[in-house]
Image 1 (cartoon, one colour):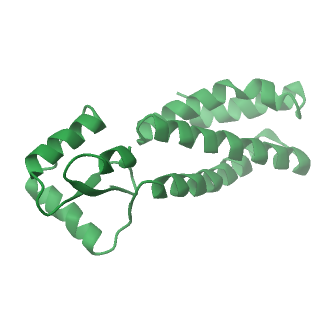
Image 2: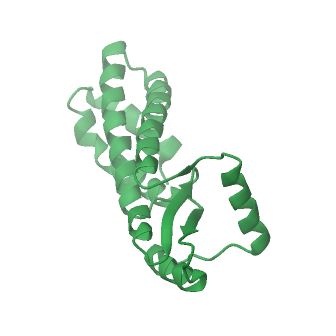
Length: 170
């Protein structure tokens, strides 16, 4: 998404905040600001809107004070790291609640890292917001039964799926 925004006429650089909710456009000095924002909005799609002046000034000030705003490629790297951290937490909770042993926990951890990394990638491809990530996590849950059965007994696989569904399902 950011790479496409960087190609918009008049946009010098684009950034996204850590939440993925706000986009910051740095315009070329001679750019027609209204036109660049209109074209950037078309790239982003609905429901995008420019912030009210006060909120916009607050976000720009946050950027100037050093809050993290990522460029194209940086948000994907951050998401990969976030998926590693989340998968570790999820694995620990699920393994404990489902009664997995050390070897099973290790295999579940590898599977969760892989599935969450893919979910984050798909969410980025779909536009990168939290709702899209939630949708992609649901997709990952749907594909787990067959993968779990490759290293867990049917009873343990069922317990893992139940814990995941209870915690992260719709």
